[in-house]
Length: 442
Image 1 (cartoon, helix red, strand yellow):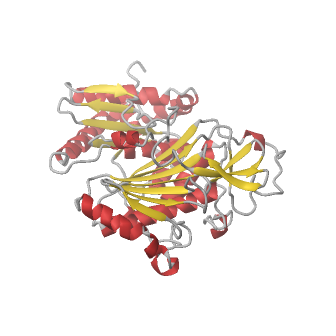
Image 2 (image 1 turned 60 degrees about the vertical axis):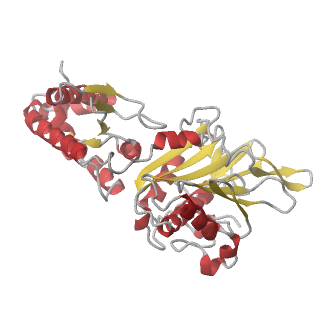
Image 3 (image 1 turned 120 degrees about the vertical axis):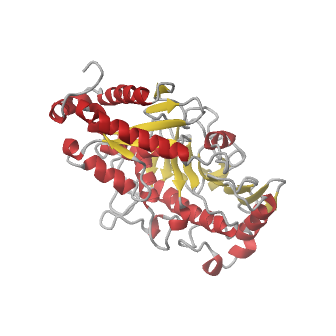
């Protein structure tokens, strides 16, 4: 296998388990794919694992002299499908192509998970065997050339600019989750959190927080004046005084905490804050800037410290809030007549050695008084990363429906759970798979 190819599918099928076990599959596909592409485009240049997306790496990128490029992601592990899709979604490449493991090699699990996670507008895909098996080389080259040429031909960069997501995330200090300054921005610098003191609960400067961000992928054409005017009207306290009548149209209006806020206009932003009476620091901050980016940060609504040395991020609150946040963003975007998709993310700041709680009934929960820390394996369910960042790109918020949980909510909850060494997103009911309303704290 000097050029990482196989003479027949049977030969590949026999070698497949060993390739995966020894972690040689991805390098083999990348080398073979680069060889095929060089045969099609001799002047282009392949790079394995390019750092072209924030917080992650694609498997292979192929750069052309025109400034365009194609990225490829190898889908070979079911548990990594959501992450691999995220890499394609967050790439700025003009051509984004998936390499999917053949159903005959894994009983169809990759195909099933891929189209379950991306049922609408899936990325172009090529079978793994078409790349690695010599007798399929002609077919593979034809597919690759077709996908790349069609993507480049339909590239509208010159007529419709696309927002540089990487640079926009960097403006919020959300580009690299390993950066010591990750999440330090105008949203989080003055946040308050609750802490148990000598006289009960008191507010102190937040050391941990959760940030939501929604960035329009293409520029909003309404202009800064309209964007900021609509933001003041939508998020203003007058509109939210009667939340049952005027809350977000697409989800439970009781969730998002905008009933008692102060709102102010800055030169290029509208800022919404909620402070407790007598408290100098806000319990949450929501900002809408001149680009129509909507951001939100809080500590007290998503983080609790019920026991000494056992800080807990409240998964139920995070997912509830995020879902409602996206619905608010949808309503805002409709109001400014934005028709495009959005890049959305959740950032959890200072997560190392924290627990995850706020679960549905039946799950052991560190937020409950009867929680038993001595349960087998429970002490391993801590986060070992200093921060967490979950991405979703090209999200079409206009397809959200009332009382219908979008797949993005399940995907992100599962991704956060995995970061805490949990196999399941425990904020969902075991029987129905739905998010119980009781997870939202009173």
